[in-house]
Length: 112
Length: 113
Image (cartoon, rainbow over all chains, first blue to last red; front, side):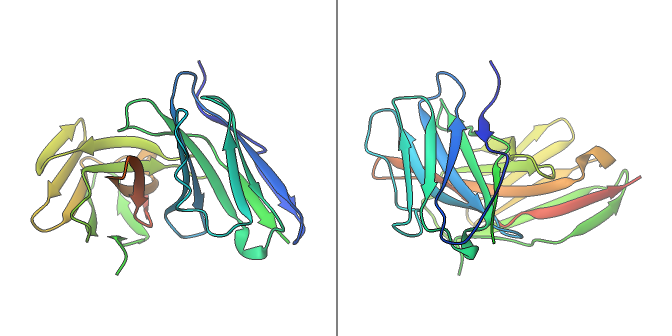
């Protein structure tokens, strides 16, 4: 019954390390999105999952970024060999009616 | 030119003021126009969305779309300190079976009591 949840809420890592971010969408929502929000910037689309269709990965900034989703449940966003420019808030959203996206609180990633 | 342009502010107004927030866009394929509110360290929440040109009102909030000018606005009447947040415009485009939202940078609003 709760909203979209994301974990961890904060992540500090060293440059070059891999990180994995998790998103639990609202139950029954078939669509799931990942966005990145850099300081002072709007949300930047990363990837979109819709049911069992092939995901739209057109927003992923490099091949260091990947995401998976099992069916209509949890999704993980993985960033390999993190760089300082990856520091941002990573937001996940889910949707069931194509108009309203419900956002989680985000994961604040800091790469030292 | 970015697809969606929004003045990032910040904007500071006294309680009770009428607030006007605006975005312009360049992509004629945008179909839905939305306003999100984002409190500090929270995810954005949808305030209003509209499809057609014209006005849509919800309580103290009015969303206005002018497709001919590619311009959208959000008006907040009788602004309250609790309205202090960042307001992001967003526009939805569906291409090739995929859909995504394109966001403005967000305008940080402070309503002073």
